[in-house]
Every structure is written in C-alpha cells, then in structure tokens.
Length: 421
Ligand SMILES: Cc1ncc(COP(=O)(O)O)c(C=O)c1O
Image 1 (cartoon, rainbow, N blue to C red):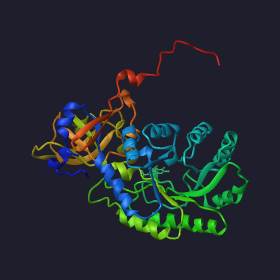
Image 2: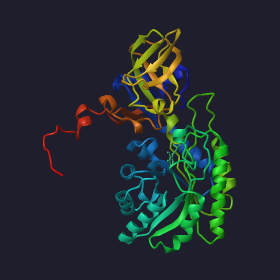
Image 3: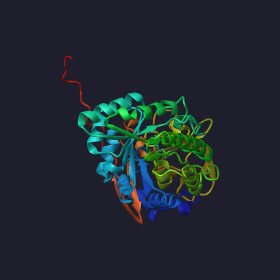
Image 4: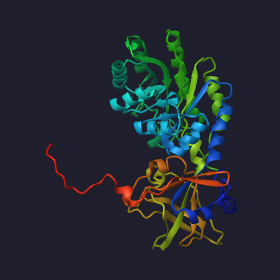
C-alpha cells in the first residue's frame, strides 16, 4: 500500500487496523507490509523477465532479520557493507553464494570472514583493497571473485548526502584506474577479477543519470571484452527513487528502467546484478506515533509526538519530506511543526504542515518509512531502540520488540577496574 491522505484508507494497512494495533503495541513503532515488499520484488522480476538477473537487496535499507528472511523466501540475495550485515543475512537464510560485499572500508577481518563464509563477490573500491583481498585469499588458498566498483563521474541529481557516483565522492575508482587493474589481473593468483559494479546514488527520480552511467559502464565493458577480458557480471547498483511526496515525486516506471538496462546491455552475455534497497521497502513501511501534546508557541504551534529523530533520522539528516497522516476524523485543520521530544531543533519531522486539528493522544502515521528508518535508529537521548512489526494478510508479528532500559545499557559499566596500557 502507498499511504494515502484518506484517513479511512490509511487506518487499515495490509488488512490490519492500525488503531487496534496501537493499543497492543506501544508507540512509536514501525509497521511493514510483507505483501508490498513481495509485490515490489515480483514487479522487478517481471520487468526484467528473460534476462540473466540477480537481485541482491541492499541490507542497509532495512536490516531487520525478518525482512531479510522475507527476501530469502523470495529468492533475493543481499548486498552487504559490513560483517554485521553478512551475519544478519546468513542468519535470515540468504545463502552466502547470493551475497555481494560492497563498501569502501572493508577491513582485513571482514574480508577474511566473508571469504570463509563463501560470499559470491567482492565489489572492490580501491587498489589497496584489491591487494589486501589478494593477500588474504592467498593465505587461505582460495580464489576471491571480484568486481571493480567504477565511479562513473555522473551527477545522480539527488541529495548531496546520497550521491555516490561523482569523482569527488569516496566511492569506487575511475575507469582509467580500473583499466589498470584488469591489465594486472593475470598476476593476481587468488583474485578472479571478472565483474563491473557501479552505484551512483539513491532516491534517483530521473532516467538520465542512469542512462549516462550505464552507458559509461557498458562502453568500458566492451573495451575490456575486446581486449580479451572475461566479464561475467555487471552490477548496476540500486538507487531507484520512491514517492515520498505524492504528486511531486515521480518515480521512474520500473518498465522504463528495465527497458534502458535491456537496451544498454543488449549484447552482454553475463549476469546482471541489481542492488535495490529503498525501492523494495520504503513504501512498504509506516511509522506509527502518538501526539504527546500540542504546544502553542509565540510564532507557531508544535505538535509534539512520541517518535523522534533517533527513530527516524531522514528528516533531520536529509531534510527529507514524509507524509504525515493523523488517523482521526476530527474536523478543522491547523498548521503545525511536527516535532519529537529529543533536545535538538533538528528533531523536526515537518515544518508548518497543514493537518487535521490534533490533540494529545492522537495516533499519526508517518508514510514511506520502511527504508533507512529503523536501520538508522539510535538510542540518542537514551531512548530505547524502536519496535518493528511485520504485517501479512491481516496478521501481525513483532519482529523487534522495544529495547528495555537494561538492554540499552548492556555493555556499559561503571569505571571500577582500571588497567595500565
Ligand atoms: C553499493 C550500494 N548499493 C545499493 C545501495 C542501495 O541504494 P538504494 O536504497 O537507493 O536502492 C546503496 C545505498 O547506499 C549502496 O551504497
């Protein structure tokens, strides 16, 4: 379901009455629709029908193990960026052979553990990392499969903090540098370099940057093949944007994206890899929160809710816009700054937003919160980690209960035992 402003519609999500759910689970909490996620996966599959395609879900978007279990059940692999994400994926049933390992800062420990687990591919992002991969694989007597992450120097036309494919960004290497890697590949006894990878950014709403980046990747792929190199896979990353703001954000129709990929890689005989994160889960999730109070300031009215920036960071971090829908029918409207209880001015979900008049105790829904929501949550201001619930055909399952105070401080201790270094 995409969240609608129609209160009657918004109240029921995946066949579950949210008012009733919020009497059973204390707000704030996230609720995700399993069917919405399945729908996105099958839509993606049918758009790419007939191609040799692997979908590796970007775990960072929502790393709850129940979401990863859903991906595993649908035959979706994982794109990971840390050992923790690998362990989550394996625990949820995603086979190591369906995991790609991306990230600019892989450590020796992480590379070793990923080799031991048998991950499918390393998306390598620097010369230093390539040399480290060779050393660690050699010490273990195994061959690592690797793709070079290319930085195609394309402006993804998205928020600067989620743009990754410009030369000034830390990600990937230039095509010239990658060419040198392939020239030297024969001397790498324990790395099989036979893949290309590019991910230019997130929440991309225009085909143009994809067109330009994919063209550069494919031109390079042809040059490599003409020079006699085998390219077994091209990983085109994630980045597909979603509709946070109805009528304003116009996501790329998936068929158009698939048509571009088909056309660009028409004569490529290997495997294409997609790493969608946001596209699969963002619109499948909502954040339920209750109004604590309405505070009338000198300048404006504040609707203080029980969710905060530690639960959903996107508005504070990226000035992201999320739909906010009060789930009551009270008549009249008012303008509010919708804020959380955290002691930061940035703890603001919306500014000067026109909403149906609200009172303390009202339940509100924050839309399209399934990606980069719970996975970015923290305990800032000593607020325990938020709960998460999965909804499926009228039923619900708690997939993360709210953290207790004891769990929140587990690992901390009073300074009693002092050691000399
Ligand atoms: C390497 C890589 N692949 C895929 C993704 C997923 O991006 P999105 O959620 O926009 O699809 C990211 C996001 O940062 C990424 O860094």
